[in-house]
Each structure stands twice: as structure tokens, then as C-alpha cells.
Amino acid sequence: MDETVFIEEAKNGDKTAFEKLVFKYQQKVYNYALRMTGDPTQSEDICQEALIKAYRSIASFRGDSSFSTWLYRIVYNTWQDHWRKEGRSSEMKVYFSEDDADEIKSDLTDAASRIFYDRLRQEEIQDWIAKLITQLPQEFRTVLILRDIQGFSYQEIAEIVDASIGTVKSRLNRARNQLRTILSGNF
Image (cartoon, rainbow, N blue to C red):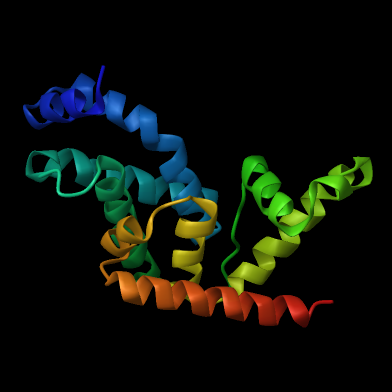
């Protein structure tokens, strides 16, 4: 069944339709929250709170953006609220799934160099990249993860973080430049 049908049914109070929408996005939303918080327990709390907010406000979903963009915006706002309450700790860990590590590794190395030895070092590389990304300011880290890890478009990111596309592109460029600088200092 088409997602729009589930959205319309959920808007009309069908809990099962909303649950189907949640099922489709829950792992991606949790992974995003985990990358931003670095804490599995806090990520679960943020996701639960965000999904409750989404359920309560599904009737107001107009369809101006995709459902996933709307949902990520709610998760982002919920995370921002938690982040502000906790004093904007800069000592956050960024977690990556094994799939993310494979994506990042393939960007950093060419196919010919991915040999057995690299597989053994995968966890080490994953941790190293995550630590480097945590050195970025929050607004840069957010757009970098949404674009380069999660694969959102500039328009979707702009809607999620409530900024113009130009601001998103600028932040992403600055994030990549700062990450390059950090990388060059680690070699």
C-alpha cells in the first residue's frame, strides 16, 4: 500500500496505519538520534517523545514535504530541546551502524584497497571517524550526518533544520572543510 494512504488513514485516527508508518522509519530515525546524541538510552527517549509528538500532530501534516522530512524535523526539534536542556555538551559520541561504516570506508578508500586486513580494522576506522565528526560544531555535524550519511537532499535538510538551502550548503561546505582540516592533523 502507498505511504500516502497510510498517512491519510493515520490523519483520520487509524492507529494501525500510523504504526505502519512508524515501522517503516523507526530504525532510520533511531540511528539518526543515536548519531546525534551518542547515547542509546537518550536516543530511545528522543525517538519515543518524537513519535508521540508525530502521532499527536499527524492531522496537521499537510504534505508540503515528504513524511520522512516531516518526521525527521520532529526528531531534530526534540533532540534540540534535549540538547539545550543538557547544556550543549560538546563531548558527544557519534555512533555509526555497520552499514554507515561501510559507506564511509568506501568513500575514503578505493575498491582495490578493501582487503581482508581492512575488514579487521573496520571497527577502529568507524570509531576514529566518529570521534573526528564529534569535533565539528553541532550545526555542522547535523548537516553533515543528514547529507553524507543519511542521504537527505538539501531541500529536505533545510526543512529539517529550519534553515535556507543556502545556509545548509554553507554549513555543509564548512563542515567538510573543517573535517578535512581535522583529518590532515591526524595523519
